[in-house]
Structures are given as structure tokens and as C-alpha cells.
Length: 116
Image (tube, rainbow, N blue to C red; front, side, top):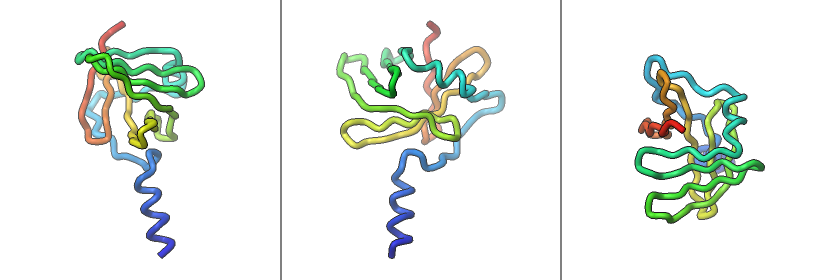
């Protein structure tokens, strides 16, 4: 019984290893590039903005102006895992595809980041 509980907890954890759906030529960000996200705001083409603050605070602001808040951490596989205040969590992988920065979510959906 305890094995089932442990497996359930691990499966629900945001650090559970994901199989990232990368395309040929995708290059994940290096540890130094991931660390450099602190203090940056990334804007997507739908006008949503991910803000990574020093100390691990995170916010996502929708084009409507509404925001969701939480914390982020860098997982061992190089993904960024976000724990929202509402209890929702997810991990994303940032890659370079040529010159373009792309966020890949755990479903394999790709979201290009606007150049700064």
C-alpha cells in the first residue's frame, strides 16, 4: 500500500521526469542560461509574460492583465518547474530552435518567445 502512495506522490510531483518532445536541432538552455532567467520577463506572441524573479518568485501575466503567481525552480533535467499558489504545478523546457527561443510544455506544445 505504501508503494502505491509513494508512486502517486512522485507522479504528481512537478519534478517527475518528463519526456520532452524536442525537434531535431533543438538545443536546451545551459545551466548558466537557466540561472540568467532570474530577473527577466519573457513575452510570448499571445502577449502573455512570464516573469522569473531573483529568489524563485514567478508570475505569469495574461494579455488581459490578470496574473497568476507562484515560485519556480530548475529541475535536474534542465526544465523550469512552477508551483502556482492555487496548487497547480507544471514543468516547461526552454530550447533554442535556430535563433528562436521556444518554451516546450509537458504536452509537447511549443510557444515561441518574442525577441527582446
